[in-house]
Image (cartoon, rainbow, N blue to C red; front, side, top):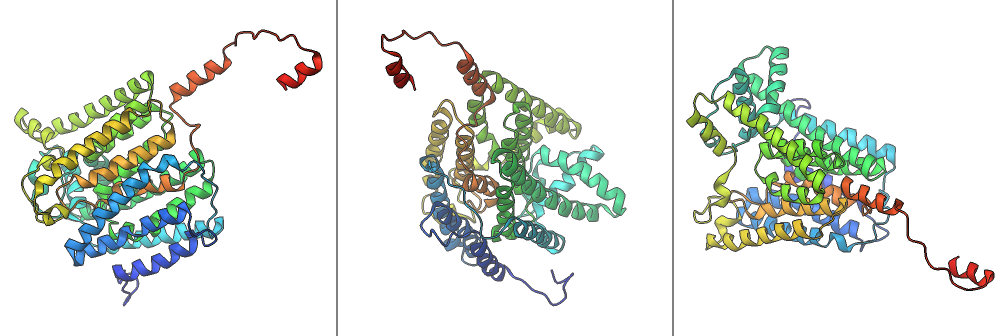
Length: 447
């Protein structure tokens, strides 16, 4: 920030305090302190202190995030119990929210331009450049840097055309192009989340003001600013959010979910929920779109593989399989503070049971159940990852905001189930036997 405004310094604790006051002024319901909205707002605001503590006091910070993740999971499990979802106005009118949204986005844009980017974002762009040039992408490239994470081929495919466009405009060197592209890709990922929240508010919630409120809160939350450059985390969340926005089109949702799975491994756990949500025809279309996207991703790996052995290594190394490692203690994260790392084994078993239950029950799910269950599964993955688990907040933050602000969506179900329901309503009903009553009594009986 000091590049644009000299001698201006806004550190993370200061931004947390300022944004906390602003969020409370706009979203807190002062007339009804004990309300569901205030409870959800308190949980959202408690995320950022965990990130701050994880940097200064790791043991306390990761324990904070672990406990908060558990509270969020319980909140999502109880989401279906809150039958009354009254319309809640914000403490700021629509023009004020639009101004706040634009100002917050401008602030994050400046932050992306001036802040140091994580190694994972730059590594994703470099792999995209190698894809354009047909060079082999080393499987262990992400292990050379402590901050770099292994990204799938979908991130490379999305980054490749952006890198090509940035290179043609700037005419800079390869390293500079990778840096510029990383910043552009980070901003576009956050923009995709903002537009997705706006579209969901307009198309699914039938109120654009709710979409503006969700998008503004997403930009105002300190955890978004703290992790603003994490392209690898924001990109799959944006794809999942748009898959929910186009849930009426199984082919489109399947394609977006396929890209999300090809970016990071955690969206794979959501596929059983989506397949169970759609009927037989919808599930076939959804799976067909997944297969097409998977074939395209494998073709991109084959393009950068000089031989079959390299192709197999890149395919196997597409995802982070260390999540299944139960024995080796990690250097950071909540699991490093536990005495027995085998404690993760029953946690993984509980996660599998949760996934099976959410997938099988209820058999016919509506949109609000799909939204809450998907968010619960993504939140549950925070307990599985051996690296600093609990800090991957941008994976579920956009979905959590949609769950918090949503109205009743029980009437929105899978397209196939809705069509069957309409056909049953339009089917002729058998004639009922007439009762031998007088005309006046008959009118009162069937009125």
